[in-house]
Length: 83
Image (tube, rainbow, N blue to C red; front, side, top):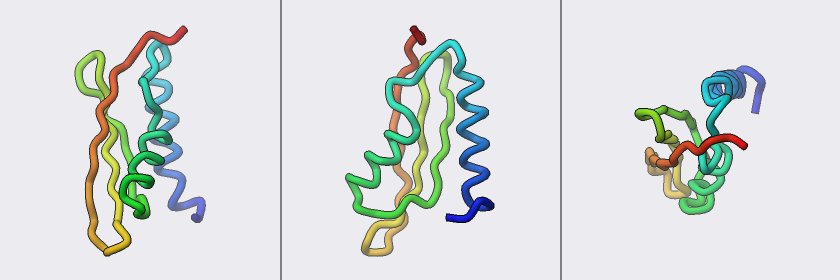
């Protein structure tokens, strides 16, 4: 994967990490991506995180399955205090 394709995802993860300095999600974006890849056997096209309210994060992951079907999957996780 080229740097130009990875940069937006890396920037998003950095900004998201700064926003959650005092709190940490139960699962990370990387873990959510790995889960979607394992469940679908597909290739991830994009992944982003969206904070909902004060205690919840939704990871939105777009994947193309081996059959060529594009799916958007969402994984919800709660924030917990960082120790």
